[in-house]
Amino acid sequence: MNIDVNMVEALVKKVINSVNENASSLNEDYSYGIFENMDDAAEAAAVAQRKYLGCSMSERAKYVQVIRDVVLKKENLELISQMAVEETGMGKYEHKLVKNSLAATKSPGIEDLTTEAMTGDDGLTIVEYSPFGVIGAIAPTTNPTETIICNSIGMLAAGNSVIFSPHPRAKNVSLTLIKMINKGLEEAGAPRNLIVTVKEPSIENTNKMMENPKVRMLVATGGPAIVKTVLSSGKKAIGAGAGNPPVVVDETADIEKAASDIIAGCSFDNNLPCIAEKEVIAVDSIADYLIFNMKKSGAYEVKDSALIRQLEGLVINENGGPKTSFVGKSAQYILSYVGIQVGPEIKVIIMETPREHPFVQTELMMPILPVVRVNDVDEAIELAIQAEHGNRHTAMMHSRNVDKLTKMAKLIQTTIFVKNGPSYAGIGVGGEGYTTFTIAGPTGEGLTSAKSFARKRRCVLVGGLDVR
Ligand code: NAD
Image 1 (cartoon, rainbow, N blue to C red):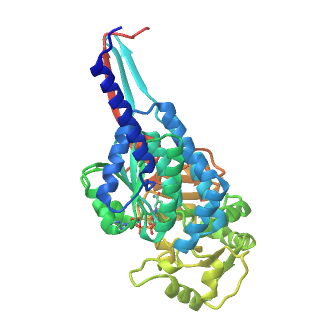
Image 2 (image 1 turned 45 degrees about the horizontal axis):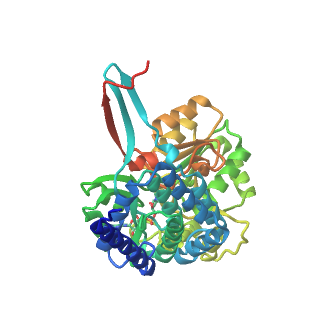
Image 3 (image 1 turned 60 degrees about the vertical axis):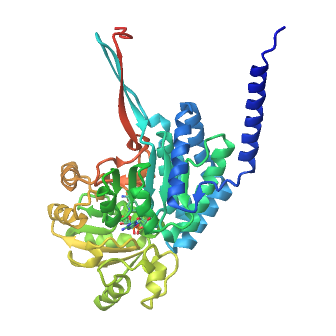
């Protein structure tokens, strides 16, 4: 038997190299996606995405399931929910549990990426959802972990890697969650660094991320400033911006149910969700009964105009925006600052105000809910459109009049319009449909999902596979 010495030598070298490679990767101190600087993070995410292109769809499905499982593991879910409340000082632990598990269970995965096919005499053409590459995703303080969970699921399902830019005030919980997910992904055999961030998130680092040429798409979930910034970046961008959701109640509504739905939606996570009820516009003939029932459902009514002014001074800052120190705080906490002690059964502070009051016109993100009285439903719809400020975000209406429900839905043009339910029905809690915490009104993707983070590409096979 002839032995090719060169071939044996090459084979031995290959085996030694691969052993060395494995050994070095085992010894290497893997940072689980956390990098010192943005350039290194972007480079690692780009390398990861290239490797990820070689993974099968069933592997992608497996990795998406890993994200769900990691988040839903009891100790992880409790830890990130607890940390989010403690670090940001906003929201409610029990509701963070609900929101985080909602994001983990109801954010669509690879099944969202449906293929279109066209066949005919000239053959077969398919249009498929293909990854953008590396996505830069900016997350808010109000839903720090929920946004990371639902964006990770959607963006990885679509074949991308992602660089997160968390809010600096949610740094620790965001980094903990990213590490947790990367650990799970590594154990499942996924390429390393599919989800990355930097040790010190900051506006400066967010800007570096936006400028990095390796980042092919930007997704901003936050207020008007960051949405405007990503839209001016020259890159493909999704902007999920602010809302100021009005809720209209007319004389045909089931008033008891409307009152309890409004209090439940408004108080959810202390009013942090961008979809939560921010002002009530009620037809005069039912306004008293609505207020009476809201109080039965856990509202505290402030009637004294001096006290309303005191509250205004307390929670509105010099620029007319909400004071951060009161955003996402409980009604009990806010009332204690104006000398009113109540128990935790009080979930929302209500008061009647004129339509131009800052509580109506400003997105407060705290459980202060003004009620504006109007003569009829048409006036209510008109005011709701004005108070929504063209954000095209979310609105609610309680009515049994189909014509008026249709009128408001058509005219207000919001991404989410909930009829006869609490606002969270619009993101799949007690309402049909999937969930997301990135609701893109300004750029039109609506409730984002895997396909929002993908490019449509056409593949053409000429002259074949038409079997009709
Ligand atoms: P924010 O705009 O203050 O911050 C959002 C993110 O953008 C943070 O990571 C922040 O660090 C970054 N950022 C802000 N300005 C920036 C700038 N000039 N340059 C670089 N980075 C910048 O918002 P927030 O207070 O954390 O969140 C609340 C806001 O987000 C509300 O307006 C709410 O309606 C909105 N929101 C919208 C959605 C949606 O799906 N549409 C979801 C959640 C929150």
